[in-house]
Image (cartoon, rainbow, N blue to C red; front, top):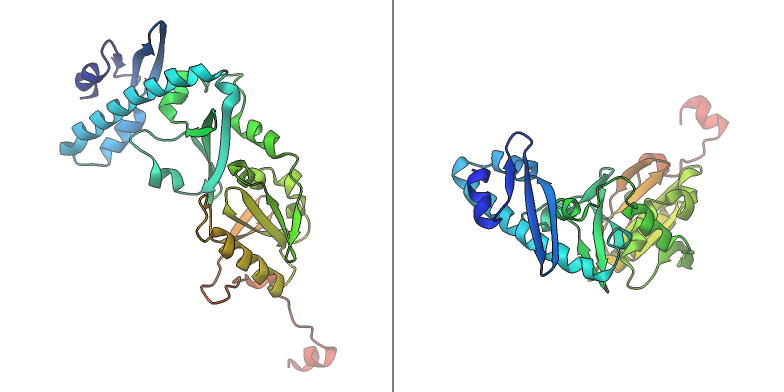
Length: 282
């Protein structure tokens, strides 16, 4: 079906059914390019639907590939595309909820977050799709890592104190959320002792405190997360997380007024017991 429909949307394309690829040519004026694009994504999507809906899925995907070619052509006007890659840490499922017919280029990051790749074009961050990544050759060996390019931009962030918690932020900079990825440098406390409680209410702000600082400080962080998340244009996650080394667990925030953190038992202070109480079990 793809082999039948593709030439209508992509004249001159070559579909390889065995390799599940389509070779496309695109460009504008004297700028002409070609790329081999995998069709595995649209095939997998079709196989989850009744066969009667396959044509509409395939046509939507092919239309998107045409649009991606136009976008790839335009992006070449702004300089080295590989160096303009950037990565943002967003809440898990964000890409699936907001993506179009072509999937985003992303990297899963634990159970709660994902790292989505963007291209910086002028002052705009444009989501990079798996199709455009192939068109632009960004998956080739030797191409700079979007994660490393992003971490280099926030390497100089310094925490400030805000009501007893530490905050990393930079107005208008959505790359700040990537501090969770570079926790060894930007959140070194995460690998010490009980680790940290951390919140990422906005792409431009990360707040944290020692995980074993107690209920009062955890509640202060919960209030900061709730206040920062509410109405923010760059919302990320409304929850807290316990980050200890490479392990991350969700710590819910109550809907009470004021909100508070629902600490796991391991982070709650344990009452001291005298030797008499220990002896008699009371």
